[in-house]
Length: 457
Image (cartoon, rainbow, N blue to C red; front, top):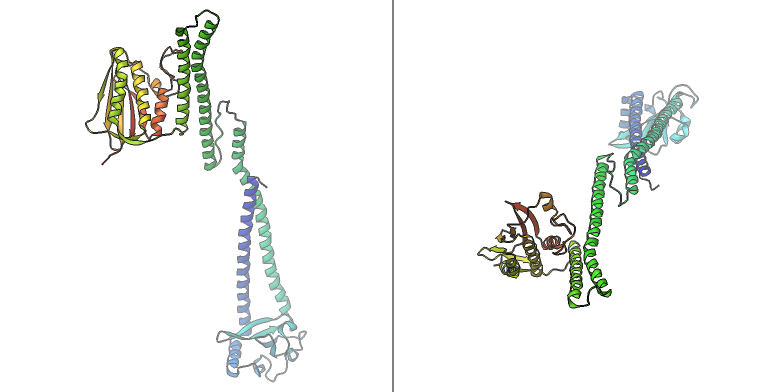
């Protein structure tokens, strides 16, 4: 019973039977009403409009049906013209509103109820919109005619029932076929999804059926593609993390084993090598923790409004000695008006340190780095341009902010950071409502990031 196609078929059948039932009730009521009106007109024509009018006028004049037998056809003296139900000719009677016969061409009918004398044709007598009696007639053919009328209504009812049954049967068949055709694409989609595993290459699911099912199939294809990409990224990250951890661990192990075997003396110089690798591992683990928290949106922030100029100047002063060692010049271009941002000062300082460190490390000796601040309507834009960095392709720029990505082809890194600095920078900016992108300008690499601005009164 918990099958969608079965529920659709039952619903289709229920709706069809409900509609057929309503139509049958309306049609039967209409037939009975029309047929009753026809019988009434027929009886009126048989009795004659003059007789009905005379009887109604008599009741208005006398207020009762006493003595009305003088108006009955064939009863001028009150003697019957027939011999009861088995006699010949028509027998006419008048009954009051309670169905009691007050006058009749058949004397033994008087005082009986209408139902007691058998089938008859009747017409109501109306005075001032009020039913005051009944004019009836019984003939030898009345019983046969009444039975014919009853049979007509019964045949009509049987026809409606037969039509309803046939329509219900057709509705069941069509409902099953239609429901199966609607749910078949869902069944196929479910089979393909149940067979797919995360380690498998995503095969496009069949997109067929109605527009809604097609949209569902397309949404599942997009989801599978994203899952596959996420799994591939996870695998790449695992491989990159293993590679980054392997180098310092290998160096530490080699130095410690050499000192234990007596190859290296157990002195400060050789211990310092192992200690540097421990620091490198600690930085790598901390960077991974920071990046994971930032991507999950769980990194605590303490935003506030502050002028960005002093932060820029302090960051440049911190890196000027390192840049001077490589004959690199850092130029700043700051507007006269304050550039007020709403962000976490500590995280903004971390962003600047990452970007300036990256720029100094990759700049050529004798080159220059330009830092420019531009205030906009609702944000502050900072551009850091490295004039002498090695040219990067469009594909390399697209991956510049990926984890562990590096521009050189070699997998080994003799110096530098963990390879997570730019990835961390992007996530820190996004958490604070900003963003960052890279572009090439006349052979230079420019990193442009924004922070939410704020106008202080």
